[in-house]
Picture 1 (tube, helix red, strand yellow):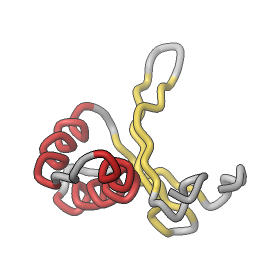
Picture 2 (tube, helix red, strand yellow; picture 1 turned 90 degrees about the horizontal axis):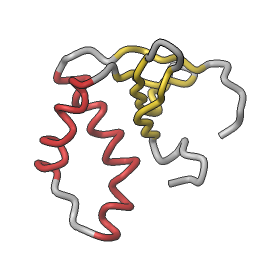
Picture 3 (cartoon, one colour; picture 1 turned 120 degrees about the horizontal axis):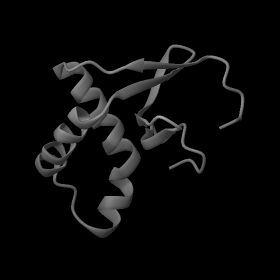
Picture 4 (tube, rainbow, N blue to C red; picture 1 turned 180 degrees about the vertical axis):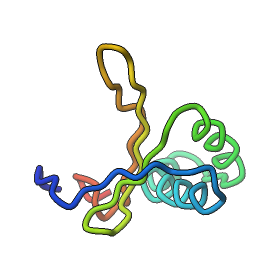
Length: 97
């Protein structure tokens, strides 16, 4: 991944089944291999844990040149913005995973 941010867009994820499925798919792609290396991936459990997190704070779809590549959540404070969760499709992660 380069530091060139041209072509990047951050689109709010709405509370729809499609947005939930997209964010779950990205989570599986980003975390699945590491989780499976230590434990079995329990899709039902992962979805149960993921749903409340989507409702806690704003999540955004990260798109590059129109291609959805990941998700990001953030918290806005009076003095700063905190990036809470970022998950990238494994093809776009810095180390290729």
